[in-house]
Image 1 (cartoon, rainbow, N blue to C red):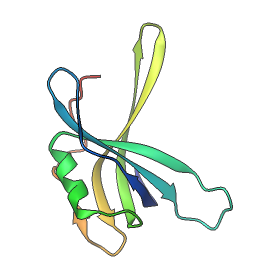
Image 2 (cartoon, rainbow, N blue to C red):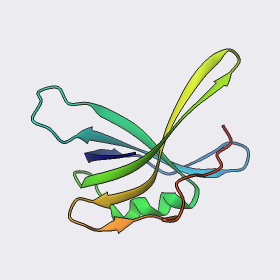
Image 3 (cartoon, rainbow, N blue to C red):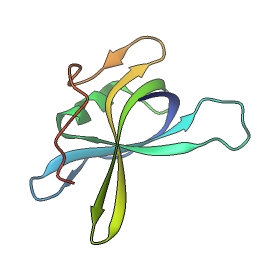
Length: 106
């Protein structure tokens, strides 16, 4: 699925899980004239972290997202990750343009 948003926060790179997977979380806000706009926090993992170097806060983007849910210990967890970002001015970046799927450890 893809969505048009503006980036409002770009977090610092982290390493997560036992295999030291690289991760960045960023926040996007919907492009609209509404008084109370929706925001969403998105994770980027692995080599795709490098694509965030091409983006800044307040860049308007089209984000291609993967949604996942997993059950663990009788609780459900959601995960939202980006596999491609495009500036609305036409500049695109993706570390894996051929594939939407990725093997994450959750």
